[in-house]
Image (cartoon, rainbow, N blue to C red):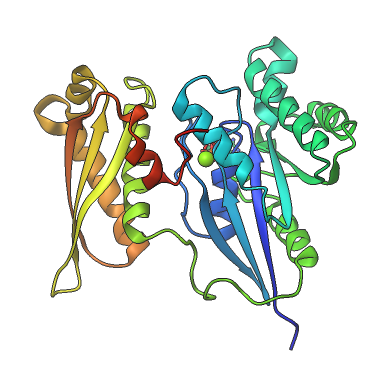
Length: 309
Ligand SMILES: Nc1nc2c(ncn2[C@@H]2O[C@H](COP(=O)(O)OP(=O)(O)OP(=O)(O)O)[C@@H](O)[C@H]2O)c(=O)[nH]1
Ligand SMILES: [Mg+2]
């Protein structure tokens, strides 16, 4: 029998590049929230994938950008901290944003973030794997042009062009990660797909649904916490969660006319939880105002973020 191998792989990149989508696709299960908004991922999320006798532990990270607020600083610091102890680094680049920027200068943020990540990796002398994502949206010549430019950084050991959403090219990435994984014992049981407790995943599921439903009306100022998780005799679970918003106006929007918005969010979240936990779920959502959540120390601790970053 082949030796067991195990690798820790940090997945780094600008906000919205598709890091969480890639991690979910590699794991083959939903472990991280995905939305079209930047800064969806807020703390390190570990997804666990198996490839034959190799266990790949993928660390999904918050997007790296130039932070201004305390909460942003903590997220970016968490992203860089994922490099410690990682056996490999994947730098995910949003090909769609880069192509749009080359055409119209429209997505300069993502491009600037990509280049500052590359510069920092170079300065730290850390080799990484370049993954150009969202190639399903970009024409071939544009892809080649941006690849050439990125490869000139002299930083990348490999280049992959993938669509994390469609799954194209993702197995090639997996194969290379597995080939290079050092021999060693697995860190998690073979059938485990993530390291976070169920109540954290449950909160992430609801946050994703709330963000997807409210993205036009709300900024990303939204926190979800699982307050209680009650096991029922019939095998189902009753879950109470609170969605915290920063302003009274946001509370009204989240609840919606006659409670319709929160009801829709709850139904979508419950369905996904039932699939994720493979059992019936009774989900009760509450919306509360918590004005200065981004200055609360306890919250950082619960998310695994450093308040002083
Ligand atoms: N067309 C296309 N869209 C994609 C692909 N991969 C991800 N997306 C979309 O890009 C958006 C961002 O995806 P995420 O996985 O949340 O990105 P992220 O890098 O984790 O974002 P943050 O956590 O906010 O830094 C979502 O709307 C995804 O559906 C892809 O291969 N093709
Ligand atoms: Mg993410």
